[in-house]
Length: 355
Image (tube, rainbow, N blue to C red):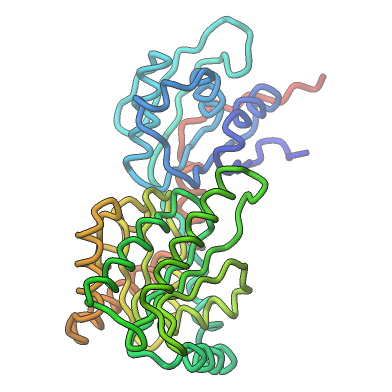
């Protein structure tokens, strides 16, 4: 349906074969592809039985965008190791093959990092609305108006590090570094893939851990961990972000994690603190966050305590830097940068077949 010479933008790992499929039928098009998740190192990627087919599918694009520079490098390395392609700078050159299968033609493409972002101005307006401010006040009051609210907001997925986070929180309660009612932890876990056995098991494990922590450390009227297994509209999320004195964004691996960017954008008061996993794409940009290794439980605990107890002026300085970065690099900037990179990518258009 695309017009002659149009631009087509393909998204994410489910459609890795699509660029070459479109290219074979419509060689006149300029095709971009963006990867929302991490691209694995070649040592892992090479284990896939379909590794060559996937790379050939991706090479149908003119420009491939990735969240992090490491992801783009991993893709270029995979092309060299699996297809024997040549890579120089951000370009990959493949001589093609004569096997007649999808994506057989020779290709020269660009692969680079173009990190995604959020509608910062729109989300800030929402968070700054009187209704959201009032809802934030109500939520904090319903929690017992603690001195410190720790919070995690994640899809219920094994990559998000929720089990590691709960272990750290449980040990902090056990060590006496934090205690209700002064400190409480809120975990929002959005339901995900609940028909898959592994995800049902994960939910059971997390709920058991929450139950154990609350059984050990909660008192009547003072809950150590509030666990919310449900989805919320954007207005409620904006209010929750304003309640969080310390936001724990600690995935084991994440392409970007936009929760981190939404949190700092919602904090129009300049308060709050962001504890951020080094293994997120967001950590490449949000260097002023309290960065941590979620696999290192002791280190994670120390980072959480530091984010709670740090000097208010230091926390304010960090938050100002984080908000400035997200404001300057919003979703519109991301789209413009991607489309500009696609427009300047190597491209040898051929007239569309009229058959």
